[in-house]
Image (cartoon, rainbow, N blue to C red):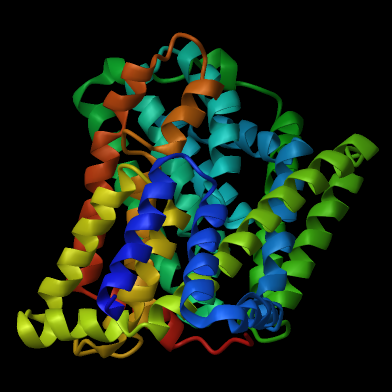
Length: 445
């Protein structure tokens, strides 16, 4: 059997196992181990050990459990709920203000957690019932929560970018800075969309009653003080990092310690909080470690077969495709796969092929893998909220009030998908939107 046929068989076997519902890391690791044993015999047993040491030597992986812990402890201790109450008072008098405030909430939760799950949980359980009670259109606000929560994988500290950085061998700090401006642009476009819909159809987003917003100054100050804690933690953590006083890992430790201290000061630090937060942090961290290990093993075997060179020869030399045409084809394939697979499965499937190919393309600017990481992450956001797989769609249905149906959830996401696609187009047309900040910021990795 030729090497090309072996590579194709590996790829097809992995996709078949993933479609059949197997765990992502198990499917990828099984194919990698089986192919290595068949190709290299008993010597293949060294492959997983080599990848484990490679994984454990990557210092940036220590940030993963720190940031996950920080997000969960702020969420589970109710500090994020205090933040929503503050935003409710600030934006209540603006047409569509609660929806706009929810988007701001999602941005802040994203900056604290790095995952979409925490933002989705807070938005669906706290923000949605409040907006429904005040007469907001259920389709509009369902889209706001889903679109806003997906920002968690783009705005730093993004856990998905940690995974991409590990596989692509790119500095996570640069990836995070690259995702910041596109993430804020996308959030701003979400806000503009909500404002436009609220202006053109006021019934979708009524103004909150004045009696709900009138409260003594002392209560407003107490509410602001409670809601400002997440801001303080985020700016303290990132300020030390950007100014060069702390490294990436040290900043993650500062964030985790600050979140714990905040829970203690609020008198919400209990044994139950510690146990639940620790269990969730451990579960998510272990899942990502197994995924990265499986991806590294698969990539080592796949690359050893010469599959990457074969793909490069096919696209660049035989078909003579323009570099931008190849990038667009990659994005289209991401969108198609995202309808059936989650973000980690997508990355592991395409990483052995796409990342080396992007490195060889002449796009006319440096740091192409950093830029491509932002494109991949935004496409993952689309994958999170598009049927039929759409992890956030099903999570939203399980958390949302009963009056919001699955049909409402499906109807709500398409304007936000178009906004995400527009953001991808902007970053492809103007790469410096993603590359200016990491190029002009010197930080300790």
